[in-house]
Length: 88
Figure 1 (tube, one colour):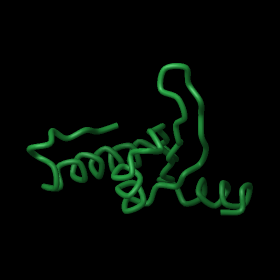
Figure 2 (figure 1 turned 90 degrees about the horizontal axis):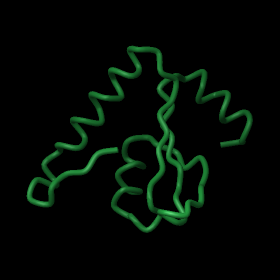
Figure 3 (figure 1 turned 90 degrees about the vertical axis):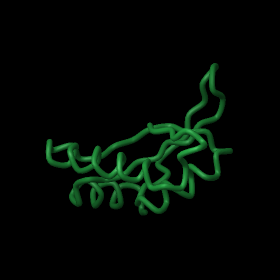
């Protein structure tokens, strides 16, 4: 997804990059963006919540172990369909 060098954290760099990427993807017609992350990474979870991501699943991999899937819906219809299917 996006990582920031420790010396440059808390400056809003990650938010600027993520906002721009999501904007471009939305303009290209992408309905949603999903990725996996380590559930022990509390700062990532907090950040995703501020950006409007939902936890939409989990996976288990041989290499990384337990991972959570985070999804943001760029299209309101896609978000509504997901909410109707899963009651979120």
